[in-house]
Length: 457
Image (cartoon, rainbow, N blue to C red; front, side, top):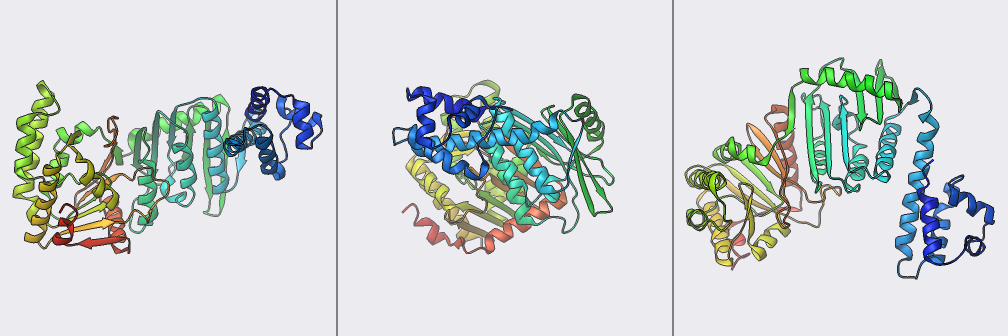
């Protein structure tokens, strides 16, 4: 068994320059109990662990950091407890669980152990339909991944897309939750085929396969055995080349260079949900300024590509977008942040507008709304969270032929890296229903051109 709890407790005792027998006396436990905790031979009772950690934090803190010490001890304890459950099965060739909640608990325990082992890169490859079969349980896995301080996550999963397969609110919230991490996430959903073996592999250290018998019996076999893992991994590798991607990771630069972003602005019936500054309907004067001044000091091909992109979107906004059916939704805090900072991302590059440029931009959007009754502008109250697991909810760009989801770091120096794209009709339909659902909520308010103009006047 890993001994995170015992090692942390020993370190706290040493830092406080006290002795284990003094701590055990203050705690009210026999010294032999504390000795077993320190060496990892035994864990405290789960029934009493919160009380024990609270007392230990009081004994071993200066008072100010008591709550932090308690939380750390609790986390260490449950990591060891989870590992002890796994450890009993590690020497077996194969083990079994019989419910979806047990499967989720198992995956979370594996992730905890990888975190405590210092693993910063997670790979999960599965033919499971995680976003349907586990739609009510997957939040716990997503939350665990976001709390692991990862460098990267690579997740390949499957989905069965047909009419009424998914609850739009749950499906989209789970997708947005997953893609909202502030680390690199390569996330792909493949179209699931019938009679596909249901397997899952995590970091070449754990594998499982699930069997449904007549849609009644649920059996999940899993193992830490290297031969079993290799067998499941080989099965996955043989299956995936024959499956079609329905939702996939794309490099931000590829969206720009393949004109995907421009094509979305060209189309009618567009909906956009911004969790960043509203980079749409930029007036020609601002576009010309950005081209003439090159404030980003770009050179060579980078400059040529960016100028070309700016010219393209400037023409598209003027000739098409402002005349089309368009719904713009933005979190009110993001609108206010843009108005106060002037920071905006255009074509993958961060620009900082002057106060006057920002005002011109917003008032131009107001003019477009006043001239075209088919342009609707909504603000979303930040007091309502559609998904508590989103760190920064990604932006959504929706058109009748595609859906793009992007998570940017606009107010940091970090390069934006998490973008996802789909032309799968069923996924487009799901996101359309999701956006419709958001608009129907009381927290989403349609505002007029006159009301929008008051933000900058």
